[in-house]
Amino acid sequence: MKNFISLAICLSALSVNPAWAQPEPVVPGMPPVEKGPGGYVWVGPTNSLPKFDLDFSGGTPGQLVKAIEKVTGKPLNAVIPDDCKDLQMPAFSVKSVTAAQVFTALEQASQKNERFTVLDPRDRSVGGNGSDVYINTSHYGFQTAGVPTENSIWCFYWDKGREREPWQVLSSTVCKFYQLAPYLEAGYTIDDITTAVETGWKMMGITNPPTLNYHQNTKILIAVGEEAQVNLIRDVLIQLYPKKSEVKPADDQAEKSGK
Image (cartoon, rainbow, N blue to C red; front, side, top):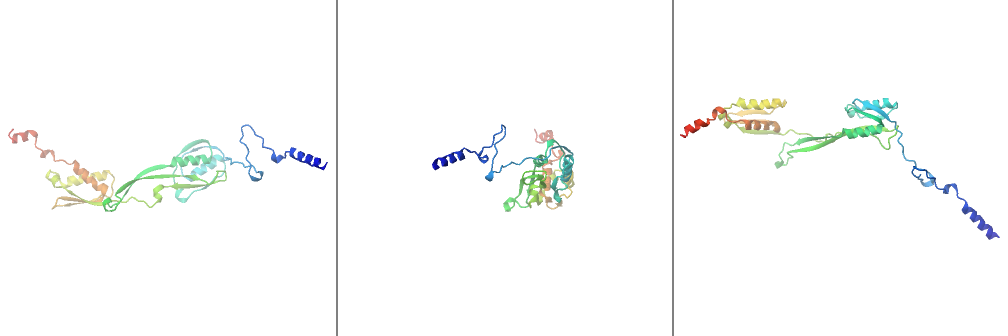
């Protein structure tokens, strides 16, 4: 009899399905609910940022923050370093967006690639770098930690690329010599040659041109200055040909030869 009663109690206990053992109902179109240890339901982060329309006419990071606060009617936590407060950003127009979306797009639009040359006055043959071309990438924008919310703190940054590193463009000062005897014999004067060179420097907007000195005994023109500017002298000399008055007509040459 006792064995029968014990068996009946066990069967009754097994037939009871407690609430904690029941599976969660599945709602069509909704993902299944995941529970962590202890039965807690994990809820994913939701985007509660307000959406807005904005026509920004361009300006500083601070002006953009004020423009967003005006259209949303809510404060925006933002930190802008002193060296970035005067940066001018482009104008844009957006519809039904959040602040996070605007800042992400701003980062992508601000990326700029520039090429610049670093010069070393020492030639490569003596251990220098000569000149090399580098690519400089810069960008800026607002960033925050974690999932953006209405209470997030947005920090503005400006990555200037190599400008933040100890790189600088060095002036390559050189001293070069040009033998002018052939040009003087062709009828040109020192003033003709130097005037043409100085005119080129002036048209290029060079305010501190190389120094020129003509050595009378050797008929050598000496130039000291930045290499790219000094090389303009060579370009001028290449274009100088004997004057037309120095070239004998073809008929005169034939008559002189007796043909």
